[in-house]
Image 1 (tube, rainbow, N blue to C red):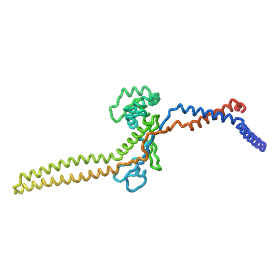
Image 2 (image 1 turned 135 degrees about the vertical axis):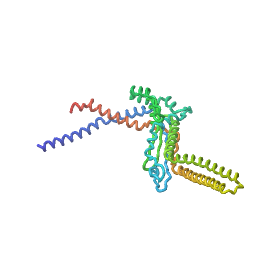
Image 3 (image 1 turned 180 degrees about the horizontal axis):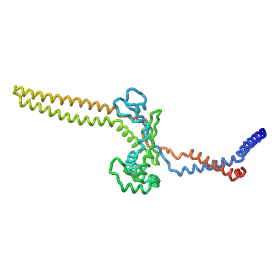
Image 4 (image 1 turned 90 degrees about the horizontal axis):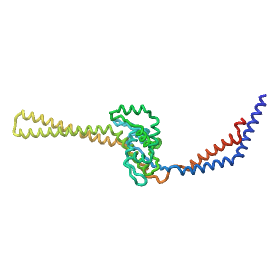
Length: 349
C-alpha cells in the first residue's frame, strides 16, 4: 500500500515538472514580449522623472595623539587631561539634528541659472519641495496640540517651539543631506542629491563647514574656557603688578634720603608685594601659553580628500534599473494573467 502511494507521488512529481517545462515553452514568447514591452514603458517613464544630481565631499579626520596610528582610535581614545573625543560614528547624528536643519535653511544659495536666494528656505519654497513634506507632517498634528502650543508659550531660550510647517521645512532640509562614515578606512562622505547641481554643491560645502565647526567646538570647548579664564586672570594680575610697582617706586621717590628703619620696613613690604605680583603674573602667563598650545593639540584636523564640486552628470533616474524593474513587473503580471485568466489553474485545483 505504501509502495503504491510513493509511486503515485513520484508520478505526480514527474508530471508537474513536465507540465512546468511545457508551460514555459508555450508561453515563453508571451512572457518575453511582456517584459520587453514594460521595459520600454519604464524607459519612456524615466524621461518624465526629474533629473537629480548628487554632489559630495570626502573627509579624512585626523586627531593629534602620541601612542596610536589608527585614525579612529585618535577619535575614540582619550589622552590624559584632554577632552573626551567625539566618536565619528556620532557624526551622522550631528547632521540629523534640528539646529543643523535650521542652519541649512538660513544658508544663501544660487541656482544653476545664476539666480540668488538669501535663504535656502526661499529656494525650497519656490520649488515646492517643502510644502509637500510639511503638509504630510501636519496630518499627524492634532488640533489640540497646536492650541496648547499657542496658549502656553515657553519663555526659555533653550526650548524650541516649532509649528508643524517649520518642522516640515527643517525635516526637508535635513533630508537633503546624507552622511556616511566608513569605519574601516575612517573616511567620511557627505552628499546631497537635488535637481539643481549648484545648490547641491553649496549645501554639501555648508554641511561640511557645520560638521567641522561643531566637532572643533566640542573638542576644544573645555580648553577654550580655560584659556578665557586665564586671560582674565592675566589681565587682573598685570594690573595688580603695575599698581604694586607704581606704589614701590613712588615710595622710594618720597623717601629717597631717609635712613629710618621704619621707612626701610615699609619699602621691604612694598618690594615683597611687587615681587609676589610679578611672580603670579609670570606663572599665569606660562599657564596661558600652555593652555593655548593645548587648544591646538585638541583641535581636530579634517583632510579634504575630495572637495565639493558641481556635478556634471545626473545620478538619477537610472534608466537601466527602471527598465529592469518594469520588465520584471511586466513578466510577473503576464504570468498572473496566464495562470488565473488563460489557463485558470486555480479552478483546476
